[in-house]
Length: 224
Ligand code: SAH
Ligand code: DHB
Ligand code: MG
Image (cartoon, rainbow, N blue to C red; front, side):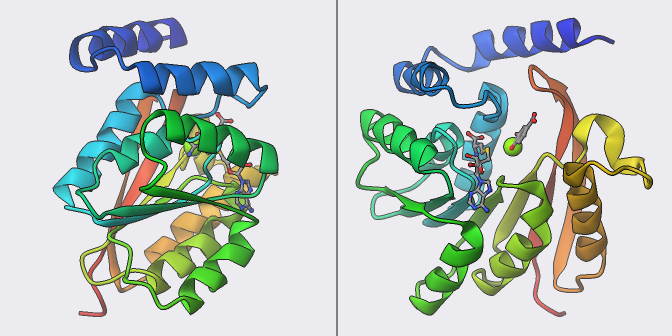
């Protein structure tokens, strides 16, 4: 199996199941034109995130790692009236591109892009005494995943869903001798996840237009 086949199958599925979407397409075009790296979720992955948020009946969503707001738009579209999404982004340029993309998608009133390192924004959010988040999508720097997951637990409730992207890394995640910080981050993340008694978790390997990677999904069950 080759990348070419994965991309062709992804395109086949996308053409049939995802109607043309001007706001999402413009978000990708303007992100690329602004020089953002093309590391957003694929269209099918974005739609899967939206479906998971809908299944979850999420009213409050937290995203860690906005980039140009592509996954943000998918997730925010799952929200009912009165719903809210906060997305954390460390890069001023990424945040600016994202805000424009999100506004074009008609979601400026629903989405707050918070500029700053997630390590700094997460304690601030915790101090604000908000309702717990129903769904949390972790997709920023991989070495930070354990810390982000710890915050996600603090900011969630029984029944919240925590999703983490890029936890397979072309299969490199099984290489215990790896010195790649993204692989080390993913491995630390699995070890941390395995030690949690308050979540029920699975991870799925994926192939597609973004190559061979995967995501983890954890349901917060409480210590029961
Ligand atoms: N979720 C996006 C992709 C995010 S890429 C999508 O699928 O469309 C990862 C993003 O995390 C980048 O924009 C990067 O600038 C941001 N990032 C990296 N380290 C961060 C940190 N410590 N805090 C917040 N954002 C960070
Ligand atoms: C890459 C992909 C991602 O989805 C991400 O969040 C970060 C990096 C990558 O392919 O390098
Ligand atoms: Mg990602």
